[in-house]
Amino acid sequence: MLTEDENALLTHVGPGTPMGELLRQFWMPALLSEELPEPDCHPVPVRLLSEDLVAFRDSDGRLGLLDAHCPHRMADLFYGRNEECGLRCVYHGWKFDVEGNCVDMPTETAESNFRDRVNAKSYAMREAGGTLWAYMGPEPVPELPRLPIVRAPEGYGFAMKRLQESNFVQAIEGGIDSAHTRFLHTTLEFYRRTDAYLDSLGPLRERFARDPDSLDANELDALFRTADKAPRVMAQRTDYGLAIGARASLDDHYYWRFNQFMMPFYTIPPRAPGGHAFVPIDDYTTWVFTFAVQTNRPISSGERRTMRLGRVIEGPYGAPVDEHFMPVANKSNRFGIDRALQRTYNFTGIIGGGNQDSAMQASMGPIVDRRQEHLGVTDVGIIEMRKLLLESVRDQLEGTEPAAARNPDAYLGVRGVSFVRPKDVPLSACVEDVARRIRETGEQIERLRELTTDKQPV
Image (cartoon, rainbow, N blue to C red; front, side, top):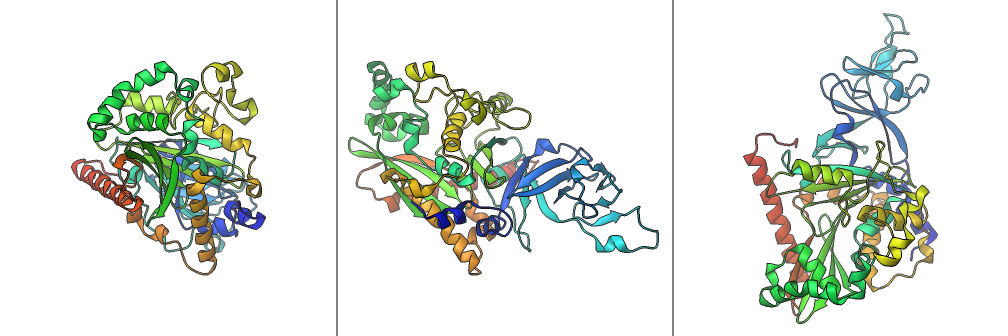
C-alpha cells in the first residue's frame, strides 16, 4: 500500500506537481495523425497533463500546439481561423504561428511593435507512426524515443486511441498485471477446465512434449494459463524501465511471460511490438493509445479496420469508440454488462478485452485510494513500477533528470516476450534472452526502414 502523500505524488499531473514535471520531460502521444489530416484543416482542442491546448497544422504542413487561450483577452483559440501559416483568433484578429509568435496584430497601429512582445505559449510537436507527439518540457527538446511505432516504416504500424475514466497509473497497473488475464479475459469454460476445453488443448500438449519451442506466443499462453492459475511474478530494472516476468509451471518447464513497462507510461504485453501508452489528460482521465507493429509484412487494410472497430474480443482492441474516441461501452452504461452472459459465458458479462480492463480500472474510482489495498504475490510488478516512478519523481526534485527521457535508443525494439525454459534457468538468464529478442527486433525494424522508400521522421 502507499501513504496518502505517496499516492498524491504518484497520481497528480498538473503544472507544478512533481509527477507532472517528470512527465513533461518525455514526448507524449497527443493526437492521431488523422485528427489533423491536412494543411489548414480546422484546429483541434487538446488537454494534456491538466493543460488546455489547441493543435493545428499550418499551410506548410507544420504542426503547432498552443495554449488554448489567446494571450490578448483569453478567448479560446479552438474557434480560431487556420490560415496562411498561422492561427488567427477570431475575437480581435491576433494571429500566431506554430511557435507561438504573434505574426499579425491588426488592432494595433502600423508603427507599433507590440506584436513582437507578445507570444502564445507553445509546445513542440512531431509526427511519427500515425501519431502526433507533444513535448511539454524544458529545452533542449530531446529526440523522439525510438519506439517500434515511431521507427516502423509506413504501413507496418497502426495507432488508435480511446478515453478512459480513471487516473493513468491505474491503467498502467492493469497493463503490467499478468495474473488478471486468467480471470478477467477468460471464459467460464476455460476456468472450469471442462473436458471439451482440455481436449482442445490436447494437440498443444502433444506438440509441447515433442518440441516446446514449436508453440507460438498465443499457444503458449493458452496452454500455461490452463496449467497454472497463480503465476510467480518477478521484475528487473532496465534502461527503459522494467522487464516484468510472470512465471507459470508445467511439468519440468517454466513458461515466462514478460510484460514491459517503459518510462513513463508505456506497457507492452508479449505480442508483436506495439503496446499501449497511458497518457494523462488530467488527474482523473487518460488517453489510452494502442499501437500495433508488424515486422514481417505491412498491416492489411482488413486488420486495420478490425482494430479500429474494436472487433477483436480478446486482447487490446475490444473497445469500440464513437467519433470523440469515447468507448461505446463506458462507465455511464456499466460497460454494457450482460448478467446472463456472465452466468453462462465469461466472468464479466462484458464483451471486449479493452472494455473489461476499463471497467475494472474505472470501478476503482477516478484515483484509487491505495492505502486500502492488500497486495499479493502476483503484484510484484505493480509494486516495482510504483517504486520506479516515485524514485524518478524524487530524483527530479533533487535535480536529476530521468535518464530514459534523453536516451531515445533505450526504447529501440522493446517488445513483450514469452518463451519456455527448463526450471533450472534463472530469472537473470531469461532477462538476457528478453534483451536479445529486443535487439533483434530493433535491428529488424531498422533494416525495414532501409528497405522502404517512405521512411518515418526521425
